[in-house]
Image: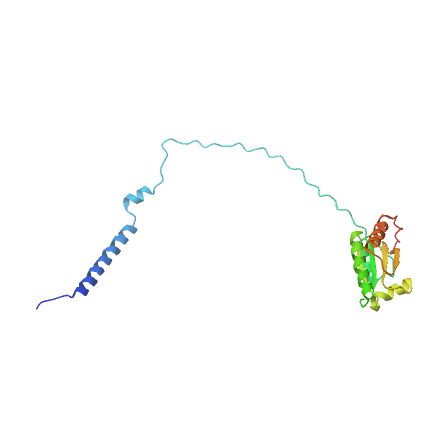
Length: 192
């Protein structure tokens, strides 16, 4: 009986043998040999090295820092009967410009814009009050009587009206009134 192997089987056997040899070589290369283990040992210096010791600087105790005292803000005392929006603005600004306007009137909208720009230029607070809203306009009606719209009022702390413009007031007029109110001598604040 004669055994014959086809050429395809010979190639498969040869490739299998090569793969087995490659696996064996890879496994042997992965293990550290005695020579490579010896090369991993630390090398001792031929000459001993002196360690340089640095002198530690003297530590001077720091003086305790005293935090600067914050100035104590006095509570802002306002006159009674002010419109809530005006009172809120007077708590954060010494001078407040109030613009009374009817949102349905074109001239009032222009006056409102001019008063807003004038208040900003005069470094004052700004409060727009809609005359059609009873909650905003009724306290002013009680305090000042009938007011035209548009109108501009300039308040100074604690709630004094220092300027009043019935009708249209341009931005320069409002800015000048706010600046004048800021530099005027303040009235004494009421004691609670």
